[in-house]
Amino acid sequence: MAARKVIITCAVTGSIHTPSMSPHIPVTAQEIAEAAIGAAEAGAAIVHLHARDPKDGRPDQSTDAFAPFLKVIKQRSSCVVNITTGGAATMTIDERLKPVATFKPEVASLNMGSMNFGLFPMLARFKTFKHDWERPYLESSKERIFKNTFADIEKILTTCADNGTRFEIECYDIGHLYTLSHFVDRGLVKPPFFVQSVFGILGGIGPHPEDVMHMKRTADRLFGSDYHWSVLGAGRNQMPVAAMSAAMGGNVRVGLEDSLWIGPGKLAESNAAQVRHVRSIIEGLGLTVASPEEARDVLELKGGDRVAF
Image (cartoon, rainbow, N blue to C red; front, top):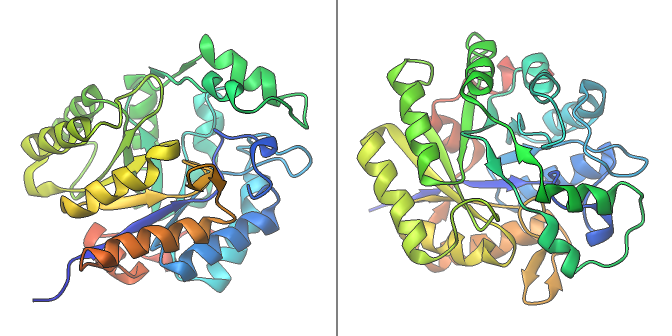
């Protein structure tokens, strides 16, 4: 019997961590492109992309910020490109939606609910910052809600309905699975669903093995064979949660958006390093990693020739 294929997603830069936290966070378009291509060469079938202002590294959801690295990645790699609709919690829904509506990627992320999204605990570890926006950005998460109302989710789904874009459906808690079920019942999301369960963000479900199993059991009951499961563990939870998913029949997400670390107290020097690490876990379980074309087949994606970049 052939070994099961595990889809690796790599979240390359994100909006959670700030540039002062690690010298290895890609910021410029060239750095983001090289990081994504390196992750794909290491074994990531999908690269999940945010953009940053090249001057100070703050989150930037403008199409001008995305265009340069999207073109380079497409020219040099066959990986599946996944563009965020999450952006940052400080942005409006129209700002967050603009890149996906413009570039029509094969995959886009979609958060399934409003939530408290606590970044402020990172202030206990990181004391000095290079840019004026970084500390207030983290501190203000104490009172900031990451807004994803039913109307917001519906707007993203309906705006992208004719683009052939599928979604990495990010579920930070059990209720988010039921929100997805609501939109499935309304016919706004079509199978197969790519459900990304997120563990270890303050405000969402925790990273305990019981939490991981509870997410999987609930998704199995709600969606049966209509979905493919993946996980991401935030911070130090990244590799333990990924290992649980691989052992339980799921897929995995790694990358510097989700964790800066490669081991206890050791910064990951690249996204590719995290991909290689999780790949070693997957292959140590007797499994293999999916190629981009295999991921496209499993998730029934439209193909890289039908995007608008």
